[in-house]
Length: 442
Image (cartoon, rainbow, N blue to C red; front, top):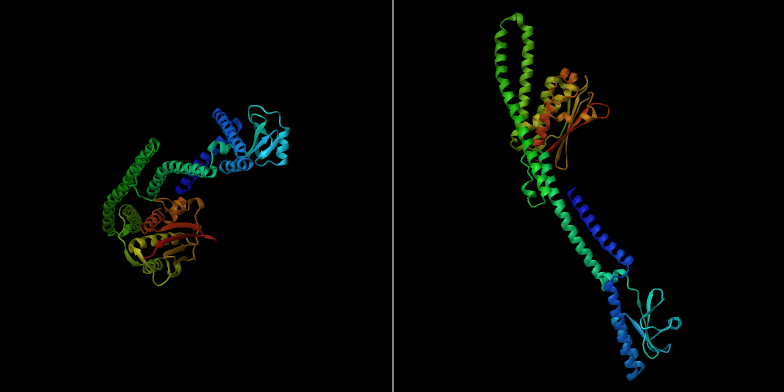
């Protein structure tokens, strides 16, 4: 996007400058020649008269051949072809019959140059003394040529290059700080709470510096809020573990009374659920605050172990596994197991009775692609992304019935992110939820 923004700014500035130049040509053409052009026209006429006088002097002293050679030299130097006339007849130079007829039809000679209608060429008749005159023809100078002078193509290229350099400088000045600000925003969105942009835009305009300062303040507030949330979860989890341990001790003592067996079983179940929730919260907090150590491991062994544990708890036919014998990976085997186990347990809770959760692993372009699919009710499309947020639950009544707490998939998402991978969910054709996990291999 940055390059796209830079390119759009560059092209916009360049086109604007070229349009200004083109507009100046149009205005120049419509407004007519300015006063300094009239002055230059007078000087041009004086120059023509001088050239004609010199040519007649050569004609009188050296003859028509020498005069014709002098006029040819003038044409080669200036592009102006001149012929000498005496009483309406050509005495030196070249004039066509049509041009001569046009000269004879022209009004009587005056002191100034008379312009003759000649279509694409510019014909002029310069009356001199004693029935003499000079006839000239040259191409029509365009408004562009009058404005930029001779060597029009070269000057146009130079003007376009200068406009391009100015456009590049303006685009770079505007797009550069925005690109750095965007990069910092992307790092912040990816979880880098230390991302700041102030020093990177210190040399920019006041508005951009103010925007950078606002961004840095926002990043600091976000970092503070997230750190407070993590500390709260960690502290609450630790504080809950102490009374939970005492509760379990009290349960052991109370079981000595056989008459209270059923209520105590219920208390024990709820205590186990509370202990599992506290463990999940601590795991989630640890994943957010401490990057796991990375080392080589075999992802196929981890998958096999997780699937065997699930079959032991849910039944031999509850899970099917299709995976290569070995899947060398780099990361933390325990954290990877958390990801797979939490997604698999979630699938087992929701898959329809009599159906199996399908686990498939394969490699593609140096990445491990893992798919887990259940045959349950699926998830509404608008909630496929939020289900990976901590404590987010789809349908409170259903989650209470299945025991979901909204933490397992969040642990899976953090575990996958810690390995530099991605996780996403989609509703499978025919029903059920399909979760895709992609991880880099060793």
